[in-house]
Image 1 (tube, rainbow, N blue to C red):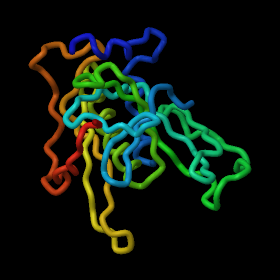
Image 2 (image 1 turned 180 degrees about the vertical axis):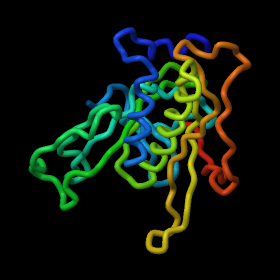
Image 3 (image 1 turned 60 degrees about the vertical axis):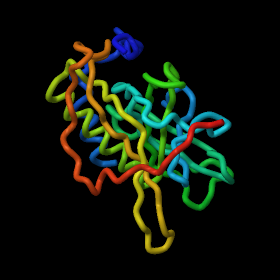
Length: 220
């Protein structure tokens, strides 16, 4: 795994220390990036690509600390009519008039991040996750705050290694609602862990915040 996240270490990127304060400020208030699209569907499964293939349960993913973005998206009949995104280290981008064909909700706040799979069948695949849902934004808020706090404590290990999990709650009107969870396993450096057995463990999470994820099966 030691060389799996070296793609994040671009000499043209700002120093890691410069992203912490702005990242924390913007996720507390909660240019699109490339890669395959990662989604969290209504059944509580993480899926990617045009065929909605399920991610492998327990696979580890590296979160690119430079890739946090926020902005706005507008939706029509099942497809976006417009999207304006920018780095979360900067203020929210400005938007113009709502694009033609947009539904009644108009522009919606959206947040996103890029990840790279480190283990399992999809090792090496890079994906982009973006969400305008309440559950998705809360998951991103928790992830962004954890990354910002980690950078403040140890700039040498800014990359969160996560597994993609799910939680749920009972809504008074909609019944059982599934929400995404980025479960942080450890933090590593931009070139991978300094020691294969070393890592910075995230703070403990209360049991009710880590209910068992919905069982997911790999695509056939």
